[in-house]
Amino acid sequence: MSTATPLSPPPAGKHALVYGGSTAGLIAAGVLSRHFERVTLVERDRLENSPQLRKGVPQGAHVHGLLTPGMNALCEVFPGFREELQAAGSRFVDFTGDHAWFMGGFWRPRLRCGLHFYAQSRPLLEWIIRKRLLALPNVTVRDGREVTGFQTSADKGRVTGVHLRVPGGGQEETLEAELVVDASGRGSRTPQWLEALGYPRVEETHIQVDVVYASRLFRRPPDLVADWKMMTLAPQLPTEPRMAVLSTIENDQMLLLLGGWHGVQPPLDDAGYVEFTRTLAQPHLYEVLQRAEPLGPINVFRYSHNQRRHYERMPRFPEGLAPVGDAFCSFNPIYGQGMTTGALQARTLGQCLSQGLDSVVQRYRRQVGQLLEAPWVMATTGDLRFPQVAGKRPPAFALTNWYGDRFQRLACSDEEALLTFVRVMQMIEPPTALFSPRLALKVLTSQPTAATRERKPEPPYAPAAVKEQAA
Image (cartoon, rainbow, N blue to C red; front, side, top):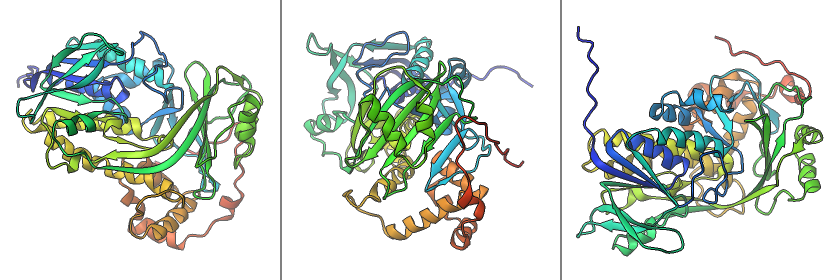
């Protein structure tokens, strides 16, 4: 039997270019490095050789976490990434075992599910990915450059490169590439540039949410002995428009996010910020803040609307161009799906490239359109429950909400319901898994148990038992 190492497949092309050093852009560049002889990453910001906030990531100071599928996609591109991130200080939060989670008016049971929320600061995550990317011999980073437009073939049927320059002016240069990936975020100018080339304007769906959230970094109180690594106080939609997430991150720090919908926003002064936590559905975060030392300013981020660009529907679209991440679809960040969805888009691009460069963009657009359906439904269903949100409600919307509320109540006492809901949130199973015949029967026949009604909130200064999931 031969033990020779299999030959690597020939590259799909000579040069690919990614513009935008977002998480999705960094992962996409790593994917492309396996399919092209050379890859260039262009980023408008100057990139530091350390974890630093940067202007091009306005939400960088807020809570970010990868879900399990996003981490799996990263580890496919950068083997050993999970261990490297953990060594740098990331906290691996079992989604039900390490997570004190109040949702729908009840505390969720604590049991190990094996699915994780990887909690760290956004600058740390980007820096670790960037280090791994720069270690690849065929990847070059051109930071401090902005893309000003596309170069195309004579018939405008293919994007063949980009024009770029130093921000604010200066001499323009052109970089040619067989594939250009737009990872420039929700403010992407691709729709305007395509329209100027004679393509139809891409159809967009907007769902206004008017979310404001404010985050602050704290030092973990030395006497905090609670066994949870993250606490979420989720709103009871549509009657309660406030929410909070406290996440432990690297360097023995905690990052607190307070948020609200439609005019409800956390105060931005020290006393008012703390007082906001006392008005939440549970008192635990207020108790923690009495002993936590602030480590920086209160950072505010305003998010106006969910935004989906339906590139998959365009009857004409140039070859050689692939939008990824928020440039394709931008979700309400409260739901924590953005980075994972971007990673899955980058993985999809790689899978399409494995079939060759011909028609790769058409395959990619179609497959990403399908990929986005589930996270889009999950992100927008909650927002549409607010009556003031304009947008088309799907058929049987009221019935679905009634079922969903009963499902949430069931998940407070039924392990199967809880774990199914987590797998859907983690984008491992589709939302239809919540409507399986077995679970539907439970939802329709269950009644709140005394244990569910009387479950006491877990105090932040005393350990609570964590039930191990039965084998």
